[in-house]
Length: 428
Ligand code: GLU
Image (cartoon, rainbow, N blue to C red; front, side, top):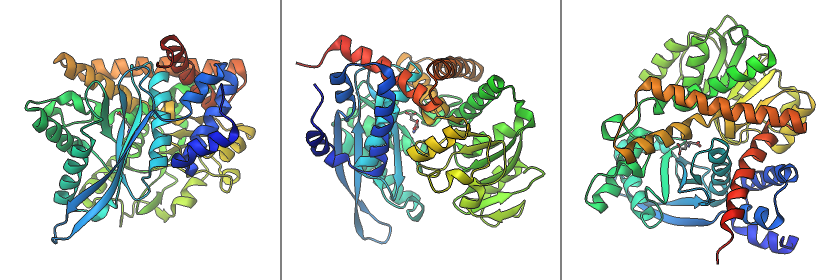
């Protein structure tokens, strides 16, 4: 039985943020095509569980600062929950809830035996020293101990977290257990049970999906002019991979702004520069432009690999890209989606396009549980197989039902979770 609109509004109060509203609106749009029972849809509209914590940290100058932290688990129907931990000034309960819901559809679309989760700490990670980040991570992990576990909820990197963050989390958890538990997190350093190819997996996966879309559209990837917003673990690696496929990367951006060179940027040189200087600040390989200008450049493929809420009703009509690939989660608003759809610009949706990360996270977890390790080539081949299978299902469903690729991806993800939930039933 569906809730009354008033009950729904009440129940949503805690999650109510623009991003969660967007995740639910996308869900509702997809549900109208997915043909699932109302009661099941109603249950999936809300996360199963959320934990809010206060994380006290001793700063280098002796002050104590308390940071708000969260972990939201959206669905445990298909298995343990899975998803990243982000450190960012915008982290809230509602943002984590939206991102956790998208993780559920992403895992289900890729046929991984997981549900979605997301967590994070609201802070300005760039202003924290490495020692402060370590203390913050260890205390946050201790606060999460009641809800995480290799069979319960498995964290991974997300915005501003990386292999080192995961190593601190794994160590904190293992010290409580009294033995090494590598399978508690994914995206760890290889030396403690991380997987080869996990570091590159999200960025390379983005390009695998773009390549597949080009094939379907009859475009040659090596003839495309690409713009990449974001130059971190996703955008930096996607740009490199595009460059290696022979495509021309005409602009990239990071926190310091954008760089544009019509003749194409030397991406490996930019990578080396960013590694040495911490960002692209001060680089003169092309003309400088703002992030907003970069999004509106004339190009074939625009890769959004920075953060959510980048393409809105305001700038969507001015975009000149012929195709958009979402490396970040939630970069395109609902209104922007409708505008791009009406203009016939394909948007390769986040839950498919950036799923390389969680897919190789799954491979990492399986390797850890089995105490066995696969080669890079094996993992790359398994990833390509998983992504092509999901891509084909999404593309064909969109064609069959006349929906956008996003709606098709959501329908495919939602249907499998719904079927599992119907089979299991709602307890008690
Ligand atoms: N944070 C990544 C995502 O949003 C990876 C999650 C994971 O590997 O569990 O998909």
